[in-house]
Length: 89
Image 1 (cartoon, rainbow, N blue to C red):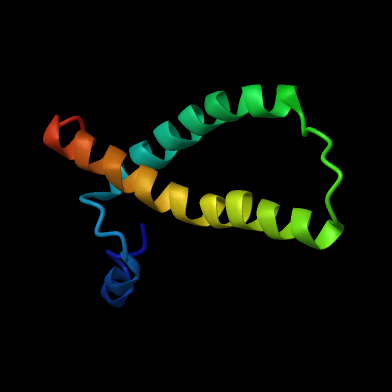
Image 2 (image 1 turned 135 degrees about the vertical axis):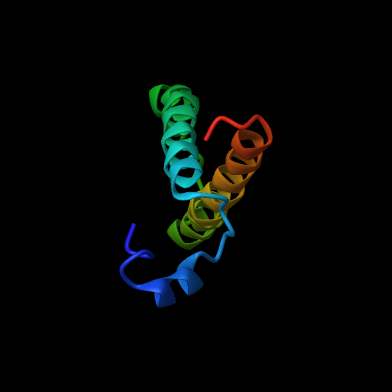
């Protein structure tokens, strides 16, 4: 939104999203889809496994931590490409 007032902020577009509108729409769609996808995980809960705290922490950080950082970038970029291809924004 501030690129018009501060053109040097364009360097922050590290994902290379097409337009502001497609970026916002992509983020909203991704968040709606991920919330729906995570509801079954939340309802199922976590199974108890007799492992040490360090092992459990390492596994959860790898799965949920790394996935929570990488998945939004990939998901939002893919949705942006589809929105741009379909000329929706």
